[in-house]
Image (cartoon, rainbow, N blue to C red; front, side):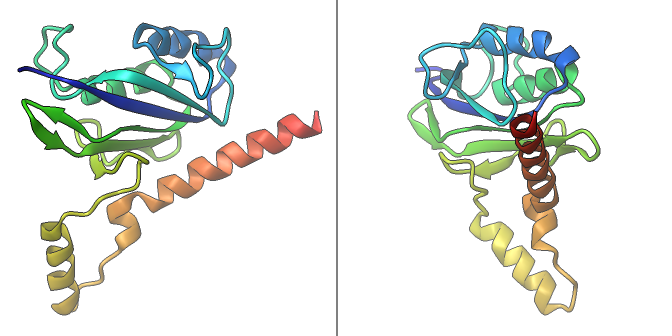
Length: 177
């Protein structure tokens, strides 16, 4: 049966002009398009959503590396646009007939990647963090034991806020010029 595909999304909050050409090439190579347009625009825009309808679930079979496609994409985003701020997630998919949760990564240039270069958060189709029963039970146990539990640290809320603020600031500057 092998790998199947799912949708992937990149909310590009900000991207410096000198990094846009390489990032545009990456997104074009991966068959991303600007939502809801049917293709990639000639130039990337800040605070825009780009989607891919055929993003691989599991390993990237075209790359022969055995790495997960999501991990490769996160690394490529960081390599090609290290000063950009973005949210990248893939929707729920199926591999060998088994449902696989979506994956979410965040990046802000002052904070770096979240949750890490080789890690991702489970998410739903809309990129909302999905906490497993095991994770929630662990957080409850830690809290019951008197440990301070910072849910924002578990879900990347600090990254989300900075990414949103960057997008809003860029949009405000664009409207005033």
